[in-house]
Every structure is written in C-alpha cells, then in structure tokens.
Length: 499
Image 1 (tube, rainbow, N blue to C red):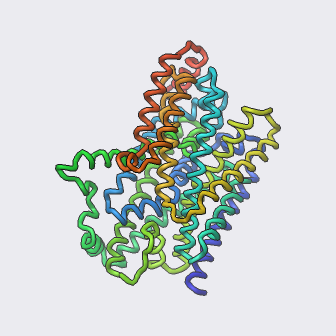
Image 2 (cartoon, rainbow, N blue to C red):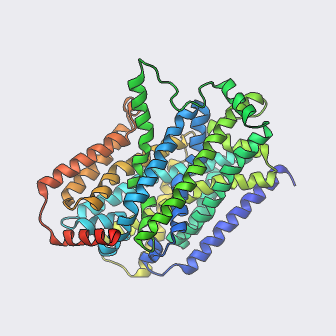
Image 3 (cartoon, one colour):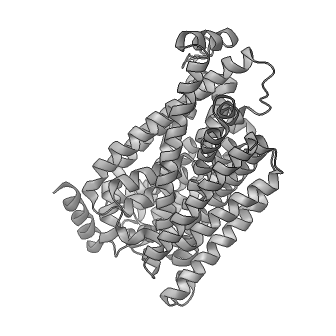
C-alpha cells in the first residue's frame, strides 16, 4: 500500500468511529428538544471538560495558531496564554452559577432562553436578537471549519479543495443531525483525546529526529533569533503600541464568557459542584495541547530551514507537513485525523447551538409550539440550513482560518460575554439594558472588524466588550424595575452554588 493509501485508511477509520459514536448517541438521545439540545443535563465533568475544550479549540489550534507562530515567533503565543486564562476564569466564575441558574430559571436550555427567563420583563426582542446573533456569527465560525477542512485535504492528499470540504461537512452533518448534543459531545471527547495525543507526539518525535533539544533550539534561532521571545518587537519608542498589541492579542480570553457552544456545556453538567473537577481537566488539556501546537510551529522554523527541499507553501499547514515527515504513513494518518477532529468537534457543537436557536428561540417564539417530534425535525432542518450557508461562504479557499475564527469569536464575546456575567452577578440587569448592551457589542464588532485601520490597532472584542458592559449597566440603571421573582431566583442560585 502506498503512503497515501495508509493515510487515507487511517482517516477512514476515524470517520467510521465518529459515525459509530453518532449512531450510539442517536439511540441514547431522549425524544424531546431538551434531550436533543442539552443531553438532559447528564454530563459527567470529564465529558463536559473534554467536550468544551475540543469544541473550543477547533482548527485554529492545529492550523491557525501554529501558522501564526511559524510566521512571527513566540510573540503570537499570547493568544494561547489569553485563552487559557480566560478558560480558567470561565470555569471558575461562570460554570457553577450558569449550571444552577439555568435550571432554576424555568429550566432554560439555550443561552437566549436563559437571558429571557433570568431577566424577565419585555424579553421577546432580547431573545430574538440573541438568536439572530448566534446564527450570524456561527455561520462564519462553521465556515472557518469548512475552510480548514478543505485546506487539510489539499495539503495532505492533494485533493480538490471543494471535495475535501464537502466530505467533512457531510460526515459532520450526519452524526450531528441524528445524535444532537449528545452526539456532538461524545464525538468531542474522542476527538479531544486524539488531538491531545497528536499534539504531544509530533513535537517530541520531531525533537528526537532533529538531534535533541539543544540542536533544535539552535536551528530555530539561526533562522529567527527572536523566535523564543514572548516580548519580541518591543522598543522604547514603540512600547505603547506594543503594549496595545499585547492587550489586543491576550484579549482573546475575554471571548470565553460569551461562546454559546462552550458555556452550554456548563448548563449540561449534572450538578454545579462538578464544575471544579471539570475545570482541572479542561485547563490541563488546554495548557498541554497549546504547548504542543506552539512547539510544533517553532520546530518547523528550524526544520524547514535545514531542509529546503521540504515544501511548506502555507504556514498554516506546518503541523500537517511535519506529521507526514516524521511518522509512518498510517500513524501520520491518525495524526492528520486529529486535525479533522479539531475541525469537526467545533463544527458539530456550533451546528447544535444554531439548531437550538432556530427552533427554541425563533420558531417557538414567533409561531405555535409544535410537538416534540416536530421540533426535533425542525432542529435537524436548522442544522442543515446553517451548514449550507456556511459552505457557500467557505467557497473562498484563500480565506485565513484564524481571521474567520477571530471575527466570530469577537462577535460572541462582545455581544454575549458582558450579558452573561451581569446575569450571573448583578440582580439589577434589565431586559432593556441587556438588549442595548447586546446590540451595541455586536454592532461594534461588525463595524470595527471590517475596518482594517481599526482592527490593526486593536482586536475588535476589546471595544465591543467594554461598550456592551457600559451600555448594559447604564440602561439598566435607568430602567430598573422592582422584580421580586428575579431577586428570589438570584438568591436561590447563590445559595445553591455557595451553600
């Protein structure tokens, strides 16, 4: 069998495993919307942690982040540092309260429905607006996964970009359509473990093959003396600009508080107390995989300088190419499958959230509530519709994965993040304040993110997040009504989490 034949065989094994897990989840999923969208709140902390981490880290961990570090050095690692800090804060301060509060507030199963049931009052515009924001930004996010999938098959097997993109989209749709939240979550766990193994194995084997740590480090610094400098580029004259750039890069961590496909895992935990165990597992996984991605990119700098015959047309494929260089073709195929795992785990989670927004937060709000079976069918149709639109956006194979992810991440972080935090920690948030803040955050990101001069100065999540927070607080102060029901539920949540 040829080298490519071994690699394709490994990828086929991976695809079969994902479809098998999807079928298992289909058989286990309860036949109602709560079971399809939230797994009936029965996730173990280990499952929730690996699922949240895998669906979080997507293709950017194995493509976008290594590509950025390969091109610029360790300075780009501030993205990963900011994300790890943000994830720790998210698991510490959001997870237990959101798990308790979402059940206390009339068993909310989506983020828009949580906002509505928690805040009360005139919440219909808020809930619809939140659902629209989910659909808009997740379409870009899912599209980034499809672009990454297309690039994967072009780089790894020389396939046509559209053929590779289409294959991944179809298989992801298959297990997501029928397995729902449980299917996406269980496949996330398997994919997270595969990603972990690959990101640890590739840099270790590469260092051994290149003669050891010292030789590898020397090869890297010979090409880029500043490659290991986290503070590269700083000068006395440019200190202010460098600091702004650092804040902008690390501000990725702010996005965690508002990512629906991540924080919905908190809502699905069995109990609020299990968030502590989930946090330890999730942060350990993130730290080790990020270190592996960073190490792989740095090693690539030295390796390709020493081996000019080796081809690296696109920096975002450095992980893919190195895995093919250093491993037996079948093992390399399994490593390549880890890239698909990163891509597909995020896509599936996002599609489920889009489906819930379409059915629970739009259809059920504007039309007559249907039977459980009808809602399940509508949810699956919603998954398909979002995937089709995302595929159309992904037809541009020159789109940078990290750019697409950055825009969508900022959109959710700025639109939802402050509202989630205020909902969990401030009794006086009103429907009018939440609505004004959410719209402000989304608009700022949409405008700022499409003006090159602004995005070059500061990542759009920073102004969007801060202005959302300011507007939400000011408007809530101006409109705050007395609502005993809100205060009672808030106190009940605090007692459950701290008692």
